[in-house]
Length: 243
Image 1 (tube, helix red, strand yellow):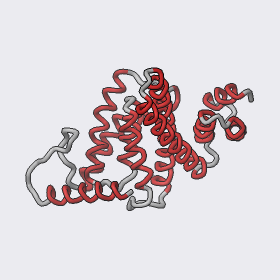
Image 2: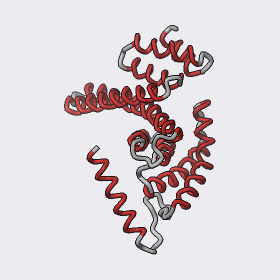
Image 3: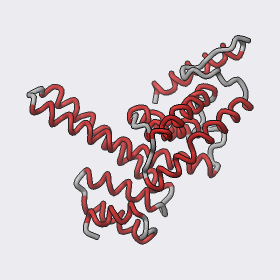
Image 4: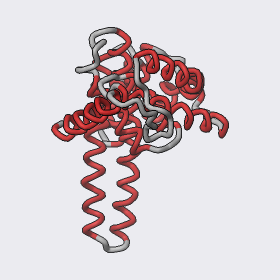
């Protein structure tokens, strides 16, 4: 948390310097820096036009085409520009995180989504349904990403163990545990925030299964079946555990 506040202070200091200047300055994405709330709104509209229909389709069938990825790469530039202008908002970090997730950049996705969750407490619109629901969605996505990262570290552990690199294997094992802990923390946050979301219950069940806590996974999947028995992800999860 301390490092996050240091980073926020640095971003705010940079913003102050740039706003006192008349120069046109680009942000790290290559876009001109946002300088006003109106610019922020325009950037958000451009990002939404590029990305949100893709987000919805990906949630529905999981398909992301090559053309979609080109749009997501463009959209993430606007989301990142929004984050530079106002690093306390949930919306921009959520958008960037989901773009990176669909672009399979899991580390950046994890970083941005975690920042979105943290920003729930400092966003000037905190307490509104938009901020609350976006933060819980960020937590759910974060649980999915960190679970994937944990699995990658387990694969690294196995590979390094076979190569007799015990130091590297132990480091990979520790990283996997950190990711598992985060996956459990954030999946639970999403479930507690939106207890009637079948998807969030399945997300947490997947974490339980990865941790070999099958009975707890079955409890969540049973609840998910009650809420939305026709959902494809619920059906797959139920089949996996024999429900």
